[in-house]
Amino acid sequence: MMNMATMAAAESAAIPVEREFQAWTADVSKRLGRELSEAERNGIAYDLFADGCGVDNAASEIKDSSLLAAGFDTETEQRWPNALTPAQ
Image (tube, rainbow, N blue to C red; front, side):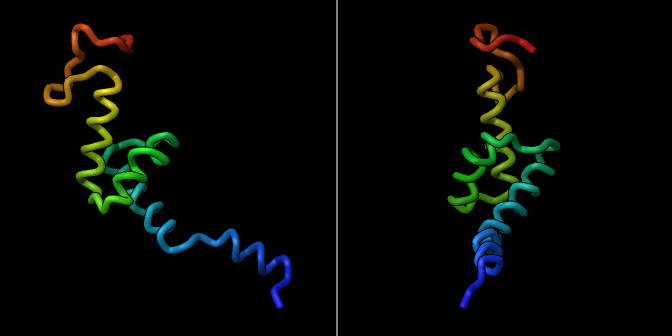
């Protein structure tokens, strides 16, 4: 018979795929040189992980995605002159 403490511990234990995702996002963060935002972790990073994307490719995709969102040309990393986002 399971008591409340055992049941709570079982429910809160990380499953192997969660631990793998946490390690993968830590590696992606290292490659980017910054921590992933919660939105990135729950959005693009989760999608890339679920698709089986490698760490290097994921870091490149996330970097390009954030540059595009900021109005930068991903090839030159230069701000587009007509970007809708304000310069920082």
